Length: 198
Image (cartoon, rainbow, N blue to C red):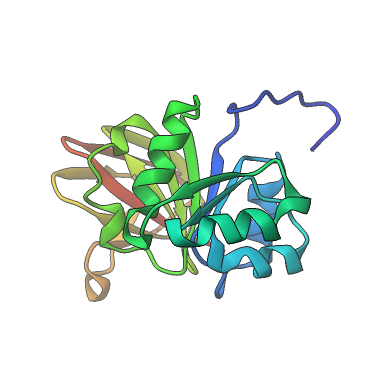
């Protein structure tokens, strides 16, 4: 952490790591810079330990929890969230919202349907990093400056995008910025806005 910043617990986004496959080290380093609360499934413990960074909450199936508590004693204090893998995202969001977090960054190898239909997404700001894109959950409005040539993708319906962009019809709801400048998105229902990671 930079010496000129003071960060309180829960002020920075927590970090949920669902996969490290094909994820850029620079993305991981950027997200770990402010020492966030780190949540990960038990299947990633060895990968994370080999990379040398700490974690705070372990997601595991209930049958594995006691064994993990014993084997990870040297890394305490740790919290454990027991659930089947299909509920890890829900359990993480519920736990973080209850503990006062209002933002969550997620690292995953693939942005997919599990992020689209969650009932409690309005309760927490989400940014998802996959192998190629950084995805922002947009509730009603999003505004950001982009350089010329930036690829942008939209997932959802009932949105309006303004700025100097060209639709890339070959890739569905994909756009390329024509000039350096501001892109503004407005929507009547939540959508996902993806920017290619350069």
